[in-house]
Length: 320
Image 1 (cartoon, rainbow, N blue to C red):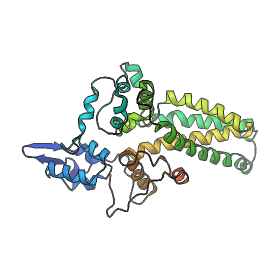
Image 2 (image 1 turned 180 degrees about the vertical axis):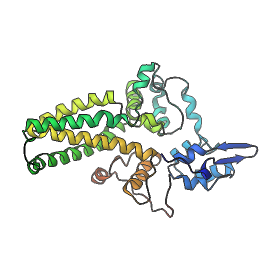
Image 3 (image 1 turned 90 degrees about the vertical axis):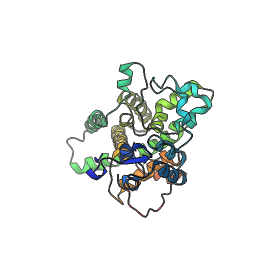
């Protein structure tokens, strides 16, 4: 993520004798740092009133982490104890869980009491390519060897495995959409602490703490189990000569998705680029339309299933 320029190094709002440093929010603000920087030195009450008028409920709730009065309904955080592991608490929220989990905050989150389990639940972005790109290379090599293509002309190799790789990428894009929409966003029953806890572990925590950089990516320990299950399903769908190529394409799609998801939260894409539009698209999913915009790497399947978010035309270019 681009560090703030010197002029942006500290952005402070005042309220009488009190001052509120919103520098971190400036750097994470979904609407860009340039839109919030215009209020540098302004009254916190004035900014809060303007935000209530122009922002969604979730956006106002998040702003309340920095600007007092931005959202008066912050009593939801009194339902849990942020100094204790959260996974053991969320199941008891019952009918208040979904409202709470869709009300984002910017604060440290601990899931487990066990230090080992807690460490396994945090995933630095570099770990994803470090784990999965060697797997892609190994799967491709196995496919080439099994089909005796390593000694074949390059043109023949291309005719065999490139279409299968592209098929795997397309398959992943459908899986990305389907899992996000029908698994991660399946609302758990209010009277099921177990399903509420599972929902929070799989995806709810990401909506609750969207700026926790260690919880944006799927932990490899769980991803390996999912990958083995997926490979078993693919082996039933595709003949042996296609299997490894399609698998390599699917895993490549997953790596692209995970790294892109991280970048959409922390990167600074240039104006009018594909990533700039997808960052705006994903921010809308988080802070305005939770039940739309399920595509992360593309909005293709949102178009197909009619869940696409239509981005408003802006009169300024957002900068992060």
